[in-house]
Length: 127
Image 1 (tube, one colour):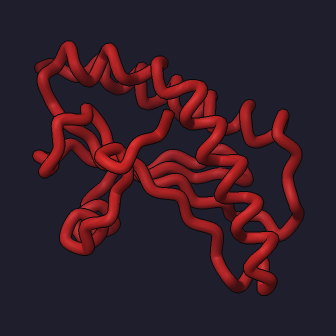
Image 2 (tube, one colour):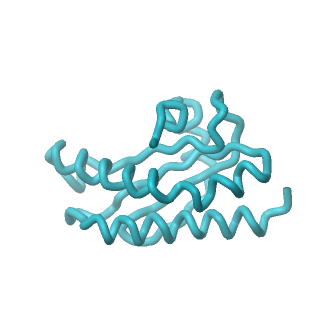
């Protein structure tokens, strides 16, 4: 499950993430992450964003966020062991950038690609 300690809600963490986080883009999903100490025991805290400009109706924005949360929840095991092995914590933000409602398969493919890229970065980075 995606529990409350795994959700990124701190404004200070968001600001730091947006200011100096590393970015990867796999259209229509972007990911921003940064290694930082978090006020939780979870290896990573994650947030999901869908711009109001792309989806003016809240019901559509909420559907896309729900899809992204579900895909992340099912695939977080790609990066969790690597993060825990390094003894660090990460803040991650996923942003959906298209203006078309996605299918589950499309979101699954893109978020898995981004998580695999993060895993590659974690494996290559020295301690």
